Length: 242
Image (cartoon, rainbow, N blue to C red):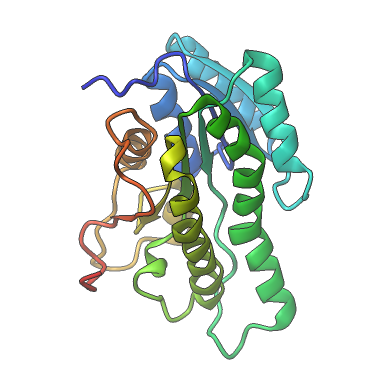
């Protein structure tokens, strides 16, 4: 299937490892030119080299997405390098564990900053350019906890559900302009972080590479009618019907 991504330009955050990295590689494999961002110069350089070795094109910009000015700088960097912007994939690492009644105000503010507001700022910076072109895809990497809260991940449950509410609301505002905004809700995937922490006994894990391909599809031409949706990629672990 031709995803219609060849020659398009994508910005991917938290791209140095994990699901952000897998998303960037999947987009590059489909012919997109990818601006990748994270806080680690070395890991980003390795990613750019890997994309280049496979015949793709990537450019790295080191940024901390909790800096309110970082999203605009990434958008400006993509426009300055390639003269266009078509796709934005916002990803971020998860906040610390904690039960709902144990997390304090500072922890909630930090989680909201990293796992909600940073993505909202990225969309606000990018969407005017997507609307101007009459085509665009925005995908946020969240968590299965958006659909089924995880008891000891109160910070993730709260911040990422806020992002989901914003996504659902914003998606309707841009649909008529050819722009879609969607959420991807991963369950356990075999990322370095999970493997270091240990896979829960009896749990199934997904492949980051396969997850990246789901993101690439949501960024594609054939996904034009998928909008305002939270797509679960969790092997069926979420038991809710909605």
